Amino acid sequence: MKTLDELIRGRRSHFVKEFNGLPVPDDIIARMLENARWAPSHKLTLPWRFRVFEGAEKTALCSAMEQYYMQNTPAELFDERKLAKICTYAFKVSHIISIGFVPSGKVPEWEELAATATAVQNMYLTLTDHPHAAGYWTTGNGAGTDFMQQQTGLPENGRQLGFFFVGMVDEKRYEAERPH
Ligand SMILES: Cc1cc2nc3c(=O)[nH]c(=O)nc-3n(C[C@H](O)[C@H](O)[C@H](O)COP(=O)(O)O)c2cc1C
Image (cartoon, rainbow, N blue to C red; front, top):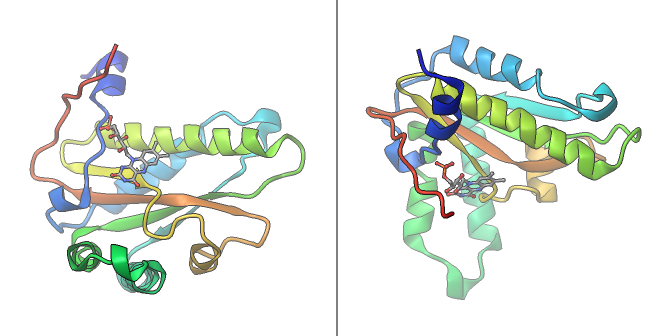
């Protein structure tokens, strides 16, 4: 059994290119969401809103990411390879968890954003405990835009903070450098 220090320091972001396309078991996703719920929040506002996209919904969200890239990338920055990469999401990523929060009005908004980040850390750490399920938080792909706010079903006063991409990897990485 891993110690707490090993779990914290062994937590790694694993990226789409590393995913093998196999589905992450539902019980892992359920555990991630349940552990997220145990994060701290001032006045116990539980401000986070996570929405899981899988199957046809995931494919539709990936298409929305492609559409976002094509419609919002200036011609001089447009990169066919980047678009080709986005086109792999639908079959490489198992689940996409939209990360957002809705301010309660009871505490400053930044506290609710901070609380949501701690909930995401709990999801990350849940994956550290599994030999093949992996993922990472991305703030690319139109995260935080009105367009993605609508695509992910957040109310108007909510804030979309990105996506947690989850997939299976053949081999986990645990090592990382941290500058002193
Ligand atoms: C708020 C947040 C947003 C992130 N967004 C991205 C992203 O858009 N693209 C990306 O490649 N990694 C993203 N990451 C992951 C970081 O690149 C990663 O945490 C960092 O490289 C350290 O690696 P580790 O998580 O394996 O320790 C994000 C991480 C956080 C906390």
